[in-house]
View 1: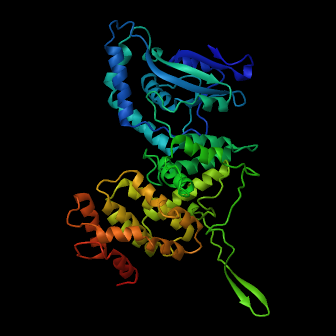
View 2: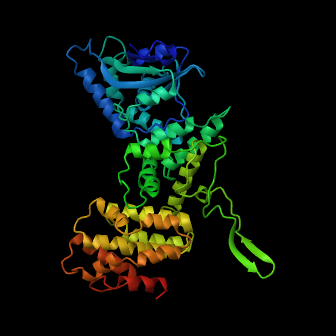
Length: 497
């Protein structure tokens, strides 16, 4: 079936093919993975589920000689006439798993394939999938021998959608694979911005950006873990830091909102390898001006610190984002910065003090308050580094703790209301502040929280709220029956007594 108009450049070919027919039909356009494809991430449960499904289908057929087709959904393929390859846009996880199974049974890979995996995550997961399949060898051989009408691969079928352009491929892109991995908007952002790197020889630059993205996805942990940090970073930190502005913002960071902010609103750089930079803590010429009577002014320049730590890149969290390289460097910076603040074994004493409080109190608190605490802390750390970082954390908790103390049950809207109700949104205060003291003064003027601590009935708190009180008393080493004097405890802790 051909969809579209009569121009060959816009033809979409849709047909049904088996696994074997797909590879045989590839011919001079071998099946391949483009540089922007994410790693192979199928875990044990998905691999074993496939074996279970195949075993049930082929061994319980009414007529073993005619088992019928086992349908595995649609595959989306971009036929690139320039590279003469058929790039798998949607279906990598399924085809990779079946190819591992094919190799195990046939001692060879399917013909007309050029599947290459450069990610260590892919390599580790392929080895793991192969071992899982080996453990199921007896059942798999039963599947293969159950039909007298050829291999099981002659009966595994797909709907193949072939498109002539990448743009058309991503128009067709289905956000929910059959037996695949649900796609996040961050997967589409990665693909979009890698394709936006338009230079004569883009592969080295694309490869560098793809490696940065993989490190980001991996949360800077072991290379074999499958948890993807990118959705959390973009949904909970970057999108909110940019879009939770003013008092009338929409708190719903749905997929389309994230794509609009980081794709549609991205600007085109003057050169693919260069991006514009804006005023920020890490992009500051001088830090002090002195008036010399009769001799003009003297600027004390700021020491230039430059290293390979992406957390020190000269960006601001709300700055315009450049397409391509700029997007990946921006994401890399804030992933590294979040890691330095929350996950690393820090050597900086101030960060260790921050982490001590964070782990004790926010390791066991409402998810909604935790998310806002992390968001605001990342924005503060980005703006001022470690300068008065603990002060900020304790006074931020003064406001968030009042929410916990007041609410019997916390709804998602509670932290949103915390930002919307005051005349100024705390995130705007952080973004616009010139000094930490401006932010601290704003937090200390929170009369609503003062009233909550003063008027709370500490004798009737439910277990969740009582647990928060106990953790706060433990941190400040107090044994009071209430948190009425919490503001004094904060001042005492920061003054060293």
